[in-house]
Amino acid sequence: MAVAATNENHILIVEDDQGRKEIPLDRPVYSIGRDRDCDIRLVSHFVSRRHATLVRLPRDHSSFYYRIVDGDAKGKVSSNGLVINGRRMPAHDLKNEDEIIFGPQVRAIYYLLQGETVPPGQTDMSEYDITLINPGMNENEED
Image 1: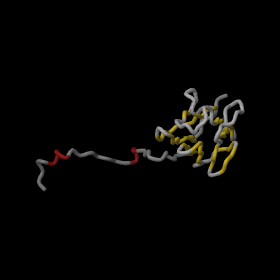
Image 2: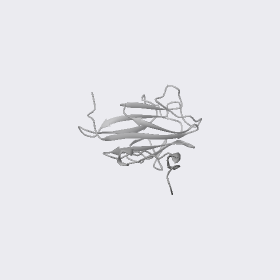
Image 3: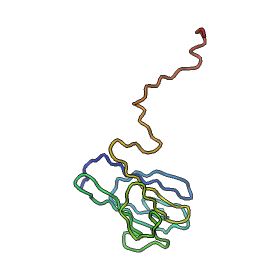
Image 4: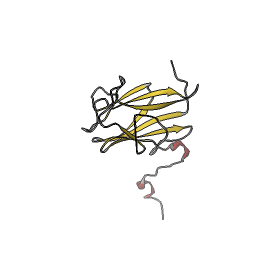
């Protein structure tokens, strides 16, 4: 079943032993963990092979949300569990800027960007009129 197009962007910013990466979310299910076969791979010995599952669920006819669940799709929970916004939880419906801790120095922050919102660090340059001047262009002009 196709999901209707919306002005929502779901993004997961992941920080692990390899640094920081931005993952746009658009699929119905993601496996998260240390295993090489996981959709979202976390590099850390503190993370279970199949640590969590991210599931897309309909909010209404035109939008959806993601729920994170501890463990794999078969119900086997992770060793360290999930800490979401400072609380240990078996599952959570993600909201903008929720922080998920998978283990020491392994975390993710979920962003739900709506409408004309631009992700952090990105700017729509079309609103600026920028003229680049080569420093050598003014050599023949008087000051």
